[in-house]
Image 1 (cartoon, rainbow, N blue to C red):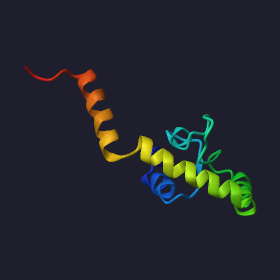
Image 2: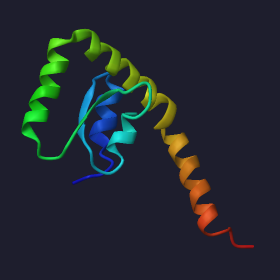
Image 3: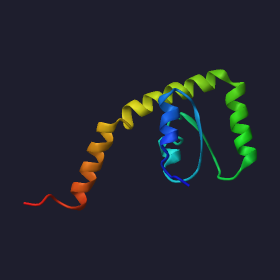
Image 4: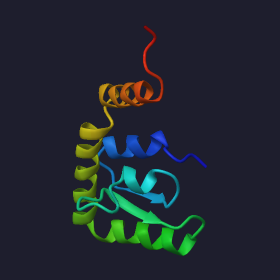
Length: 100
C-alpha cells in the first residue's frame, strides 16, 4: 500500500533490479518511462506478470546486472538525503513563504 517504499530504494542501492507495481510513484522511482529503467513494473495483484518478471530477471543475468547498476546510479543521483531535503525545502517555500 506504500506508494513510495523505502524497500525499492534499498534494493536499488544494493544494485538489485526491482519489480514494482504500477502504484503511486513506483514507476517513476525506477524510471520505467525513461531510457534507463532499473526494474520492471507490473499491474497490482497480477501474479502471472510477477512470475514472468521474476523469471525474466533470473534467466537474463545481463538484464539483472544492467538494471541493478542503473538502480544504484539513480539512487545516488536522485534519492540522496541532501537532494531530497533540498527538494522538500523548495517545495515548502513555494507553498508558504518564510515569516518575515
